[in-house]
Length: 387
Image (cartoon, rainbow, N blue to C red; front, side):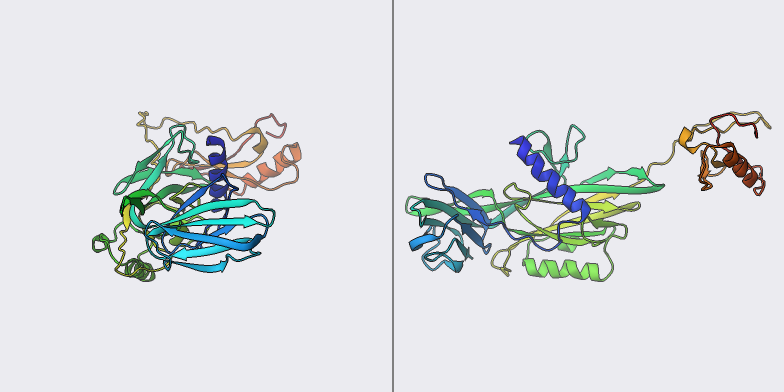
């Protein structure tokens, strides 16, 4: 269980980082029905299409669909296939209920499955906290920590620029009809197929008026307007979107029922507010309301620790830094500003270590002027006759 989950998460995470996953909604993958006595159940929010497939063409009797759990004979639509000789069938329903499918192929092998459609009951926004410092999700070993309303901090330094990255998860829970005696009861279960909209805004933006359950189309329009009016984050974007502060995913697209995720990256310090809105594939108006979720994430830089030092007036201070043997002969600049430990000013020559190269670099120093706060020298790890 752990191994295959890690493989799925690693593949998708790397695809997101490399920009291989499109920002458009990814359709739910077709389900290959298992041969009897196998039986598969798919859980989705309603208005999500379901495609079933079989290895060989269906026999002359075709596909058989049995509505249940309150769906009714006219409660679903056959979008394509589902006839004699078809190897697939695509169905959709816009109400609560279930649909059983039975089909036999031309070899006489029978297949069965079931599709359940439910309404969005609740959503849970989480961040991944891995106790082993491994950022790839592993539900079996780590834990999902609720973060709605919290502030998190993460940073690292590379190429003299501060960058940051974060990853959050949304789980969509659906409510499904279940027959009990002569009636039905609602049961909850993670649900695939919900369209999840993600936004990145400036953390200072007042969005208290959005903290409500409403028509999903109306909420998305208000969020889109805020981006269009320039309230989006300035230095943070969603991975794989070419710098966009908006993206959308589908619950279940990470191989775990009901779960989806986004990765976001920063090029500079910034506090952002992330808004997540899970909605139906087909707009439901005010018949089925949805609720946005909010949380904040702060990307920051760490100030260099300042250690007080006591010196006598006029006492000389030795500045030292080891640059590595491969940089032998490079020109180095030491400056008493912003606590700089020194900067490397490499002169590109074919021979980096020979005496001729050393003398050439030393000649370059004659063009530089040393001052009380700026000294030019040369990094050398081996003795040279010219020194």
